[in-house]
Length: 181
Image (cartoon, rainbow, N blue to C red; front, top):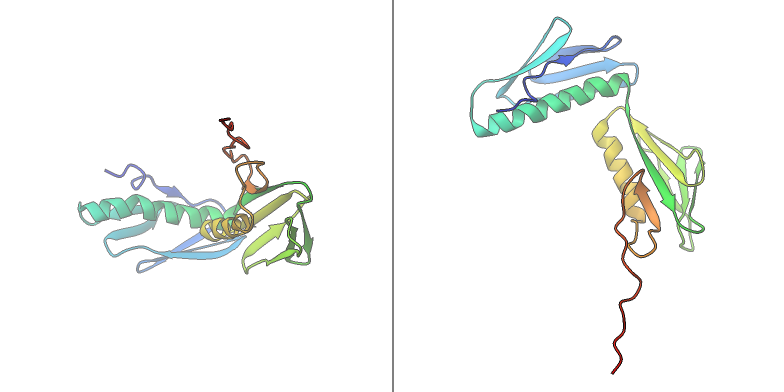
């Protein structure tokens, strides 16, 4: 039984939600987002709340119920407040800076790595060791942050690289003991 799927989604002030068949669209100060729910789930807007109900009790329908409720809740929250991910750059000589809307990273290679900010996503570098990726769409924010992290993943010996804020990197010892013969 999906406990998440039955929770109503409250529409906050400044956000308008419309349902056109199976397409749910939310408009707010941060933009406009939409999600299409599957045929086995009904969406209803009443009394400033969005309710998702399932048509049958099949296993697939039950599993999609909570997932689609979360997707609709994310677009409602995203157009009002937005989402952001913070990345830390750790390493001697590793620095980041902004050139217009392009992120320029010096990550120990003989050339700087440039990442252009995609449409709908804002990339900021408040200082030389911090990157903030923000936008209205939670999925796109996560994808862009993951692609930036993928450029230089944290390595396990010194911990150098790009990681999420607060992420723990399991460290390895440099050398195991050498046995003498």
